Image (cartoon, rainbow, N blue to C red; front, side, top):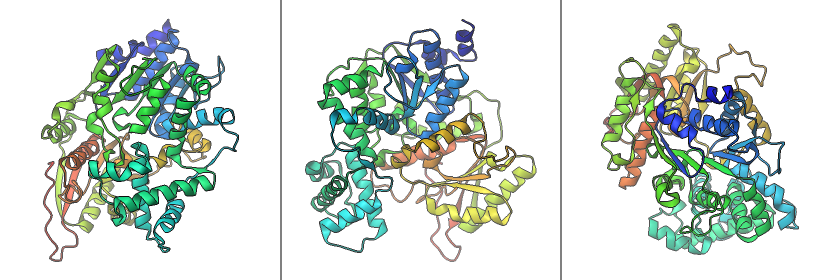
Length: 522
C-alpha cells in the first residue's frame, strides 16, 4: 500500500486521473513539458503495483531507443522491472518498453522458425547501396548521384510505411500529390521500387520497415503464432501517437486483435499519448489523424485527458509558444499551455547582419552564460537544417567551448538500435556512467536540428535562422506543409526551460545579398 501511495504522490489532478484509469481505451493529450513520461510510467507502475496488470503482459512502445530506455529506467525506480521484449509466457519478464521496431523484431525472431524454413533474413542497416543497385537495375544508369539515392530512399520508405504497394504507387502518388523523387515519373519510380524489393529478396535481406510488415503478415495469415503474440500483450501503451504511421497503426490494431479498420478490436486496453501540436514528421508518413480520431475508433473511452500544465518552461516561453499556434487554421486541435513556473527572463530577439555574425554572436552569449555559472550542456543551438550547423561549431570552438552535434539522419532508421546501444542508453537514462567518463566532464553545447531535438529540453535555447526561407523552410506550396513548419517552430520554442533567444541573419554574406525577412510565425 505504501508503494502504491508513493506512486501517486506529486501528481496533479489530470495526471492522477490518467494514472488511475487502468482499463479500457484511454487518450492522453500531453502538451510540451506536461509530464508525459512521468504520467505514463506511473500509470504502468500503479497498475502493476495494485495487481491490476501483469507486468509480463504489458507493452509500451515509443519512437526512439533513448525514450524507451528512459521509460525502463523510470519504471525501475518505481519498483517495476523493465524488459526490452520477448514472448516468454508466465513469469520471469517485466514490463516491455521498446520501440515499435525492436518490439516487432523480437516477436519476429521468436516465431520465425514456426512460419518459415528459410534462415532469418539479414537486416540492412544502410539501405543506400541497395537503392543504388535498384536504380541502376531499373534505369540502366550506373553512376548514381548520392542525392538521388537519398530522395529515392525517402520515397520508398514513405511508400512502405504508408502501406502503398508497388502496383498502386503511381495511382496513389498522383492522388495525394507526391512530388516525383529525383525527377523520376511515377511509373519509373515504381520500377525502381520493385527492383529494390527484388534486390533485397534475392540476397535474403530485409529493411527496417519489413520488420513491421512481416509481423503484420504473420498476424494476418498464421493464427497460432498471431495468438501467441497477442497473448503476450494484455495492456498496450503507445507514446508519441501523433507520429504513428499507417503501418504502425495497422500493427497495433493486429496486436489488439483487430481486423479491418471498421472492426472493433478484441482487446481495448490501449492507452495512447501524444500532442497534435508536435506532429513534425508528416513528410515521412506520420499523421496526427489517428490521435485526433482515437475516440471514433476505440470509443467509448474510459478516459480522455488533457495535460496542459507546462512544468518545463517559464511563462514567457509558454506565451510565445501559444502565440505561434494561435494563428494556425487547426488551432482548435491544439492545447493552450499554462506555465506552472514563476516568471523568468523575457524572450530575446536579435537580427544579425550575416550568418557569420549570428554564429559568433550566439557563441559569445553562450560564453557569457558559462562565465555566469551555466554548464555548456545547459545550452542548445537549434537549427532547421543540418547545413546551418557548421558555422556554429566553428564559432564555439574558436572560443574554446566544446559542443556535440545532433543531425537529421533518418527518422525510421534511427528507431532501432542494437542491444549494446539500447543498454548504453538505459545506463545513461539511469544516471550511471557506462563509458568511464567522469561525471564532471561536461559533454558540451548541443547543436541540433529541431527534428533531432524533439523530446529533449535545455535550460538555455538559441533558436537560430528565424527568417522566411529557413523557418518556414523554403517556400511551402501547401497549407499543410506550412502548418508543419509552424509546429516545428513550436517544438523548437518549447525545448527551452529558463531562457530562449530567437535570431536570424539579414543576409547570407553581407555583400549585396537578398535581404531576409523575419519569420511570419513571429
